[in-house]
Amino acid sequence: MKNYPPEFKADAVALYKSRPDATIRSVAADLGINPETLRNWVRAAGVSRPRGRRAKEPALPPAPLEAENAALRKKVRELEEEREVLRKAAKYFAGDCVLSTKESWL
Image: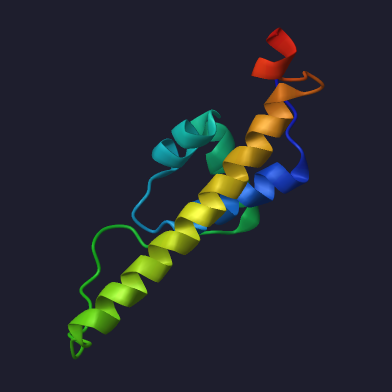
C-alpha cells in the first residue's frame, strides 16, 4: 500500500474538480493511481457532482470571440494545473533517483 503526500492528494482532488467532464477513472489513469484511491480522496474532501444530466437554463450566447477566448483560457488553466500535478507526481515517484543527461554519457 502506497502512502502519498498530502500535497499530492490535494492536487489530485483539485485536478478532478477542475475538469467537470472528466471521470475519476480518467483522472486516476492520468496520474497513475488506483481509481478507488482517488475516489476516497474525493469523498474525504467533500467534492460532489450531480448525477445524470442537468437541464441548463438557456442563456444568451456571448459574442463568438468572447466565448472562444473564455474556453481557451479555461483550457490553459486546466492544462497548467494538470502539468503541475504530473510534475509533482513524477518527482514523488522518482524518489531520490537522479536522472542522467546526455552530457553525463559523454
